[in-house]
Amino acid sequence: RQIGFNLVRLTFSTETVRSDPKVQNFSVAANPDLLGLTAMQVLDRVISALDAEGIMVLLDNHMHDSDWCCEKWDCNGLWFSPRHSADDWIDMWRTVARRYAKEPAV
Image 1 (cartoon, rainbow, N blue to C red):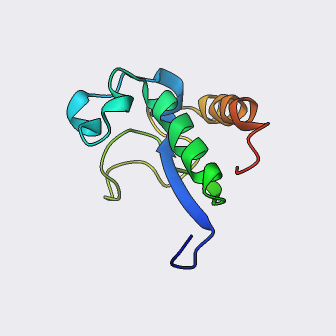
Image 2 (image 1 turned 120 degrees about the vertical axis):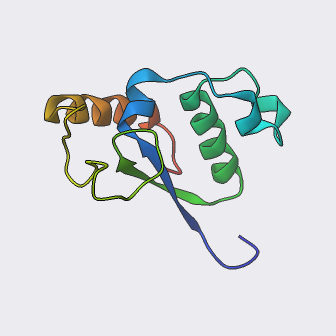
């Protein structure tokens, strides 16, 4: 906020919402309070922290698979892929909408 921005584009994957894996410890080593949480719980904490600073959140379903993006072979260009159907994608957005419906920053 101090450097003049008021919105963060926060990316996530379809796979993350659908499977909600436990986050590996090395991924949150700089934030020990996040140890043992699932990916969605970490996302909740990030959104809450941004909200506490008056920063809005634009949730960006940037990829289907939880992997590094953007290769021609990664199948993340549409709302479906070989691993995630259009119905999976719609269900994922319903889950996200329900989870953050009362979160003012989102």
